[in-house]
Image (cartoon, rainbow, N blue to C red; front, side, top):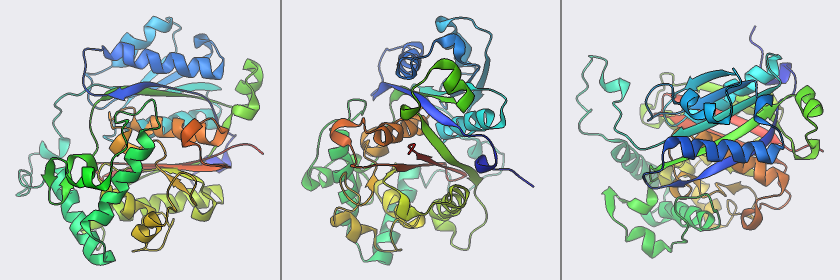
Length: 383
């Protein structure tokens, strides 16, 4: 019988840090990554030698970048593991760091992500089994078609769907770590460069570079290092799933999200109604609408109405993507899932400044990776 996080010892996030997400530059990945890790160590108030294991998420960098980067903090002999799971690489690294602490194998663990843009071949296209659609359906084409399907199913317009980008660019304008830091009107969103179908560039995530880091600790680690327990945010659920065969194959991302979120709620003993903050995978605007319905934040077909009513705004019933989401915060791939955790920790500590969701106590982070995998984590502040 498998054990979940609730069956093991408590796990807490005690430190968070970023290097701002940005467009491609000459900045070495080592500088990007070390900036985030040093910020996380400073936030936790602990020295580098206290870290026992490092999980390094990356999708675009060459093999084994962690050692060449982390040695600049000191050659302590810690274990370094590299994690790649497409867009969900950071989420996968965070999950396995959680499990290491929960199991008792370590008391203090680093989970970090770093990436720089590069051309990478997808394994799905290198299997030796050809697909007639490989050259015809790029990710943005798939999601543009999904947006048309959603609009028909929910009675929404293309402008309704674009309102997700208006909200998330507004949130990103308040985030010093975001790649896009400018609020946009609906007219600006709709008038952007055409990408596919009704999608314009401002409705799609930019892929750039950056880094994010979090430090996890057990209760024993917190006591031994003298960390302030009031700033330690507990991880109360961690679930990873992969795609099954679904009756509606066009909505595999949403159906996989529904399954994964359901398991996370069961593990934590919470429901969607308990959530104050959600950071979810919104590489394209329609995804946010699909996923808030899939995780039961609202009824199916009701996401646009709730969005227009301000339910998902900062200050609304549940702040969705207060960081700006992938659309405005950015999506450097390896760091993205880690950065989501950092944003939720800021919110639950009450340290998010202009992006603060009032009274935030419970948050959920969600990422999918090429539709094949999904990760959901739920965090809560003490008290």
